[in-house]
Image (cartoon, rainbow, N blue to C red; front, side):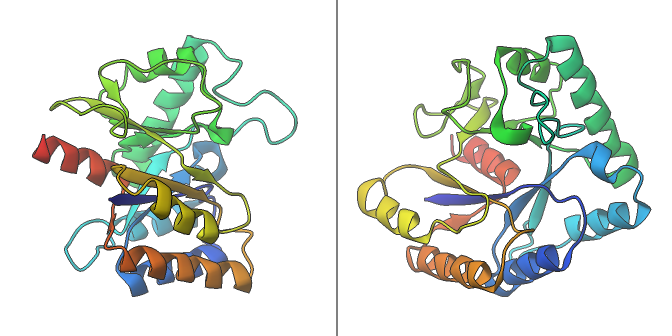
Length: 242
């Protein structure tokens, strides 16, 4: 089984993010970190941090961290409508374009994965994403989505991918503060035959207990001989084996 760790809201290289990335390095595993353009675009120090972190590699020379497009302004935090929820296709295309340009022009690499702030998106999002061929992966929380998927967007847990299919990964566990250690253990008892497990976390508000739980969860997963991958790495892997 492939395990993907979706870590949201990398807006500054805080001590907690430093600790999170150190744990990835110590365990030689990968994760994916979401960046919202407006929250870092004017911070040159954070831009440099992301560039440097994007160059880190596991022992097999695969990326340690994949930074992904988490939208432009992360609307919804102050009671307004989530950025990709109650908005039309044109606005969503504009926000995706601004974010993609920020990645290429300022971060000096291309974002290959997208996930909406608050995991709220609609049919308009799928239409908007179709204009960005470099975005190969959507990560979403299935209970919040309002559209059905069809080719070329395929959920590998539901349908076999064909070469060239883009993939939509459903978030299995979505946590703001806690670590789903018990849920993950129960998951392996009931659903261990699925192709991937996607866990959403938010490292910035963690305390010591949360970091300990995170390490325990990693240790459990490594005992199960899972493969930790970034979303784009998983996309590339599926294209190789299918």
